[in-house]
Length: 102
Image 1 (cartoon, helix red, strand yellow):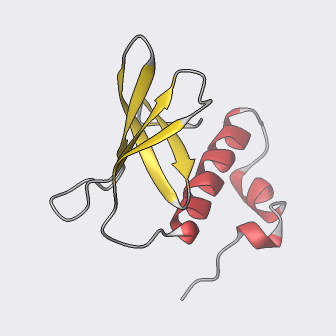
Image 2 (tube, rainbow, N blue to C red):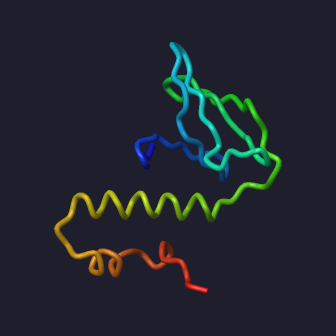
C-alpha cells in the first residue's frame, strides 16, 4: 500500500482508492478522483481479507493510470533509498515502465 501526500492508497480492478476512515473492523476507501461525476468507493476488513463494493463507478477502469501511479511510487522509493543520480536510476528502469511521449 503506497503512501502519497500522507494518504495510504490501494489499487483494485483498475481503480485507485485513498484511505478515509478506519473503524474497529474495517477501512473505508474513497476513489482518488471522487467528484460529482464519479464517487466510487470500497470498504475492506482491516486485514484486507475481504473487499466490499460500497459505491459503484459510472465509468470504466483505467489500468494505465494505475500502472503510472505504481511506477511513480516505485521510483520515489528507489530514489529515497539510493545515492544514484536520477538520470541513472531512470535509465536503469525496465522499458515496459517507461511510457512513450506523445
